[in-house]
Image 1 (spheres, rainbow, N blue to C red):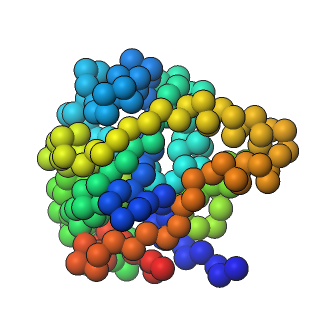
Image 2 (spheres, rainbow, N blue to C red):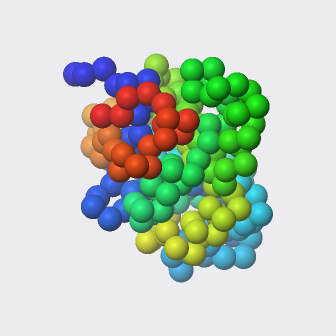
Length: 202
């Protein structure tokens, strides 16, 4: 097996959409899944983070057990929207090899999108050497997300609980069969600025 690059977008996707995950309270998640869009309770004036990695989402929400994150949504985004977010993003932390200086990095944070790389997780939610991407949306990016990019929303909370039970029971082969088929995602070259997408993508 080839070694996974330190930073690589991996996701469930097809020709038109890419799946990302978010977790919310039931009063936000249930109407969103029912109507295919976010409604009352969803705060457009706050940064909202979307995550292509299923296992990183499970780590973040504690298998849908953390307060305020009791429902996990699988959101199918139109790929052109996800690519727009990558093209209009800035890294959430300063990196000497990518930014001329700290002032340049601080200026970049005016962008409507933040890109963050966090350790990917295994089936037991332990950190792995390679990283998973998180994409934070604010301002105009949130408007585009809620009004233009979403092609469908599914509540996958029950599936998350089923996978957790299998992990705890040691039935890891069964778990792997239930996981989303995430594979490397390569956005168009012209939406891969170095400051937002460091490291090889393959």
